[in-house]
Structures are given as structure tokens and as C-alpha cells.
Image 1 (tube, rainbow over the protein chains, first blue to last red):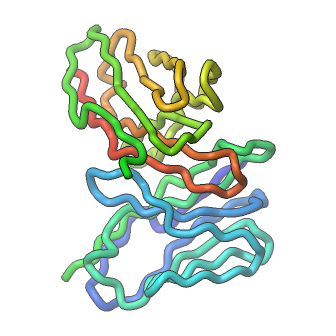
Image 2 (cartoon, each protein chain N blue to C red):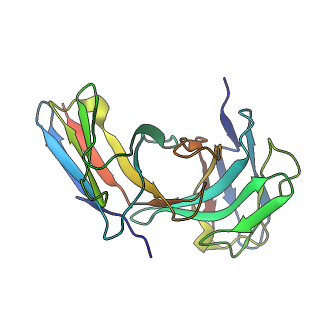
Image 3 (cartoon, rainbow over the protein chains, first blue to last red):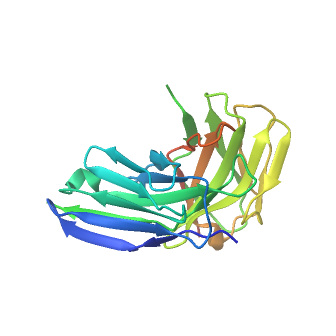
Length: 112
Length: 113
């Protein structure tokens, strides 16, 4: 059974601090996606990582896919209140074009 | 540029009542799905469809029915609401192309008393 575990479950930090959240599995994934969900809205895709060791940057957000494609991390530099939200990672189920395995998410609060 | 549209935004039901949550997408996506989201439990798949006339069960299908008569619409029916169905429900759609993103609606917050 493919599982994705996210840590920490909850993180509350001050504006301007740096942080890293993690998405780990004992299974190999062909790719991983990161979504951000703001209160009252549905999740929105931030990035997809496909190649082992890949690093993608989205402004102050840096996403990394582990060399063995079993884990991923999201690093935020100089966090801002607008980064507040629930960060979810997801990976495709084996042998499916459609189904995703979801992590339970990291709830991030950035205090001004 | 509507994307995925869900109605209603909020709903309160009494135990035993039935209702339909509506979902429509205008992106011609073949795949549509319903999730429920509960605190600490992440997103759990209820039902999904890979095209008009095709539906299948997800992880937590009991108490829910779906149909897919058109590519655009994928309604979720609660047959006899129970307090355990209190949750936030999301409809989502995507194409079948590799790593295409899953597009979500803004959710329906359902309370069953």
C-alpha cells in the first residue's frame, strides 16, 4: 500500500522566518505534486516534481524531489502571512492515470 | 474561466434527509471525483468517474451515490444523511494526461444534525 506521510502536521512561525515541511513514503513514486489550500477554498496545484533529485523554485518556495523518488520537501524562505494555508502532497497511484495518493497535510500559519 | 463549480456552498440537513451536491466543470475533463475532507484525515476519495456513463467507488463510498450522464456534470447524492457525513466535500477534475493537475471546486460544507 502506497502511503504519504507529511510532517509536521502543524507549524506556526513568525513572518520572516524560514521553514521546511516534508512528504515521505516507503514507496517509489513516479512524481509528486504539492498543493496549497487556503481557508474556504479547494486545493490548488503549486508544482509537480518528476525526476529524482529535481529542484524547482516558485519565488520564495523551493521544492525538492528525493534522489530515490520516495520523498519530497518544501522550503519557504522569509515566510509571509500570505503563505498561510494547508500544504498537501500527492502522488499517482501505481498503474493509474487518474488516482492520487494524498498526504494528510501540513497546516502552516505565518504570524505578522 | 469557471473551472469546477460546486453548489451549494453550505448545507444543513437533519438525519435521514437526502440531498444532491452539484458539480460541473467546463474544461472537458474526462476524470471527475468527489472527496471529503475531515480534520486530521486529509482528502478521502468517495466516488470517481473516468467518462460519461462510467463511475466507480473510491475509499469511502458507503451512503453516497453518483452518476455521470454528461462529461460536464457529476452530482453526488446523499441517500439518508447521517451525522458521520458532516464534512467538507470537494469535487475535482483532471485530464488523463500524466501529471496533469487536479482542479478542485471550492467545496460544500455539510452539517448533519
